Length: 302
Image 1 (cartoon, rainbow, N blue to C red):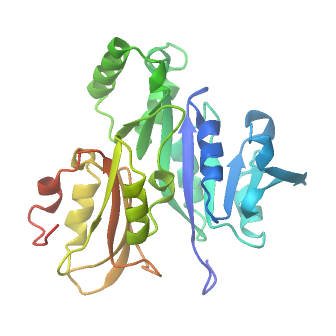
Image 2: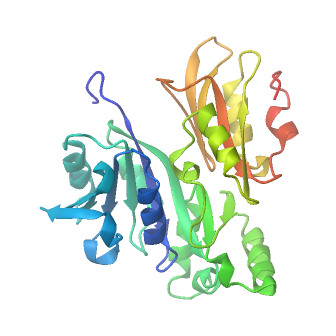
């Protein structure tokens, strides 16, 4: 049970088959921490290459990183590692858990959800654009790869810069034929807004994201003019066809209660609004947002 006044810590599980780019993503997120105390859990320090300039020291299975971040090993006891991490002071603001290349991120997320101090904010699974199809069709590891992909809330197709136009088209058609439940974001070297993983902090950050937006992503703020049917909104936003990849904010439901709302890929969650600003900040693929699909029958304006 979480003690009164204790902040629940969001956790993001990062999975994907060997060589997909998980460690590169972790390093990118650590560099984009922007004052957040991030704790990283990995299976073994030997399996992850945290950039040397981020490491301040090591003691008792814990790497101290720049900006108050830490990196710890899981070993054979995930619950024990999580409880040890939660006992540290100061507590982290965000937890990143990198699974092994053959691990099941969904199983890790289920274990994390057993602890009242933590809430799973999303399961992100990376794919190597060059090798994901051959790996998925391999007689030995194909089942593992396909199960990893099916457990994702958000899929990152990484290393797309290595594909020729023909290869990219073939890969896109193959992924489309799988009818995976999570939205897919194409990237190279994991170049993407960190808010896609962390979640945007509020309308002010939306403006900053928009200022730095490139040709791939766009951002905006949904400010309804009245109460919202949150159940219907959740169903609409968690449908990958709506185009929105990440959203965070606070909205008032039809019952008059103000709630925190979060979307990470296909994962929709309601929570205590805390200090979240009114409105819903969203991140989407450029020109992909289906406003009609999202707000049909909600009786609110965009």
